Structures are given as C-alpha cells and as structure tokens.
Image (cartoon, rainbow, N blue to C red):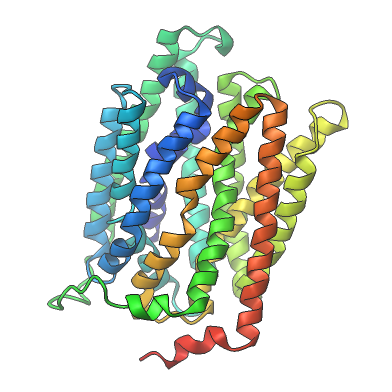
Length: 415
C-alpha cells in the first residue's frame, strides 16, 4: 500500500511539475514561451487547485482512496496526450487548469489521509518522511530515464540541436511520463484495498468546515506550508540557473537538476525520523534557519574562483533542506492533535491556503528572472527565496508560542 502511495504521489504531478522542473530550458524553446508565460500557466493551475482542495478534502473523508486516486491518475495521463500536440500558450494555460482539478480534487486529500492512517499515532514523521522520500526516489529515477530519452534525440553538443530534434526529444519525455502515470493508476487499483468505513453514510461535503476554520493552529500550519512550498517551487528554476549562469547546455542542466532530486529520499526520511524522535515544529524551525542563510549567501555569489564551489554547495544544501521541510510538515497534524475523522477537512483548508504559491510564486519568479536576464535576475530570485525562508522562521516561532500557551490543545475537546 505504501509503495503505491509513494509512486502515485509523485507521478500524478509529473507532467505538470517535473517536466518543466527538469526540462525547463527545452520546454521554453519547444513552446516558444517566456518564463513569465510559463509562470502564468502555473498560476492557472494554482487557482484551479485552490478551488479543489477543500471539496477534495471532504471527499477524502468519505470515499475510498483507491477509487479516488485511480480516477485522478487516469485523467491526468489523458492531459499528457494533449500536451503532445504542443498547444499554444492559452491552450496550455487551460491544460494546467485541467491538471489543477485532476491532481487535487480526487487525489491530494486521499493521499494525505491514507498516509496518516498508515503512520498511526507515534510514527507520523516517519510515515510522511517515507512518503516524501519515496516520492523523491521515484522523481529522481524517472527523471534520470527521461534525461536519457532527451539526450538520445539530441546531438552530442545539445547547443547545436535543431528545432525538430528538440521537439522529438521533448515529446518522448512527455510520452514517457504519460504512460507511467497511466500504469500507476492500475498499480494503485491493485495495491490499495477499498475503504468501507463510511459505507452507507450520507456525504456531507461541508462537514468539519466550521471546526477547522475556527482553529488558529490550522491557519498557522497553512502559513508554514506556504513558506516551505515556496522553497520547493524555487527548485523549478535550478536547471535554468545551470544553463544561464553556469554555462551548461540543456541536457547538462536537466541532468544536474536530476542529481539534486536524489537528495530528496535521504533528506525526507531522515527528517521524519528526527521529527518523531524530537519534535516536528522545532525541526522545521532549524530547517528554515539553514535555508534563510543558504539562500542569502548564494544570492551574492558569482561563478568564478571559490564562488563556483560555494554555488554548488548551496545548490545541493537547499535541495536537502527544502525536501526535509516537505518530509515533515504534515506531521504537524498529529503533533497538534488534529482529530483523525477531520483529517480530510483539515488537509483541505491547510492545502487551500498552504499551496497558494501555485498561484503567485511562478508568475513572480518569472518576472524577477525576465526583468534582469542572466546572473542578476537569478541573484534577485535567490534573495526572494531567502526572504520567504525568514518568514517561515517567524511563523514556526509563532506556532511554538501557541503550543506553549495551550492553543494547539484545543483539538482535545473534540468528540
């Protein structure tokens, strides 16, 4: 079951996020779009996803994860087939809106609830660490094969690739991700048992909304996820940084970004174990501190002399701590005593707020990069990430204060 959750949890987002993350320079060339236009496509995804999180959470509290996730994966794979036609910017924006619904309303709440059920009461950090770490292993493995597919269609010097070669390589990547997503739907259906706990109960999509809206700890958790998720979205431009600042070609940039993805399974699992041994909230605080320093230093560096070595150190250091954050932030559900039967509702509201970077981050990041092409744009982008990490530090500190004053314990009165 956990293997199915891990594989599905990554591949459902592969077409929408991993393709542009690892192959951004190639995607910009193939679709003839700018960073700003791609960022606006992500914004459409974010709006559609935002409208889907809360009803998706309520759906997860009622229906079987197996059925919800299977339908979601099939619908997402169908979108990949349309992507093969290389639609224009407006049509691509609509496709991203479609993916915002297909990957969230039936999938996200079901994934988090199933993982929390698997983790029990004492190993939530480990459960979510395994989920995030396993997803990272899947992402890195799939990306490694996809990079090889792209390289197969490109000449030895990728800078000399023709438009036809670049298009053929990109289409091979999209076909690969689409087929894997479809196969994963079958794997989920076979591996996850149907959940009959709510069989016969009436479906009340607004159940639990009043309770979770009235809990400050839910809003603070959502704010923490906003800051952590901005760091994750920041990784989307690392392959572009490798091309525009480090002077790599498209294949080399994609390969370097895929190398960074290999840190995800190690970082997330170790972070989960640490969170279970000590405390998830304090662990999050330490991670935000490291990220704020790392991004701040990186934003001042140029790729010459010792600066190049420091760039690579911060490149991989930020990968590690961003993935560590993602590995444990949903462990706050158990640490803050969220009632199990309201997991879907809480995840719906937290995700509705916490994943708003899907709307605003890429458009802002794209405009920062396009305003000052080259190293200056990337330095400004990294300073932007450093500022968000500082906000994350302050938000976690607020949650610690709430916990000391007993606010987090309000969940205990729920029956």
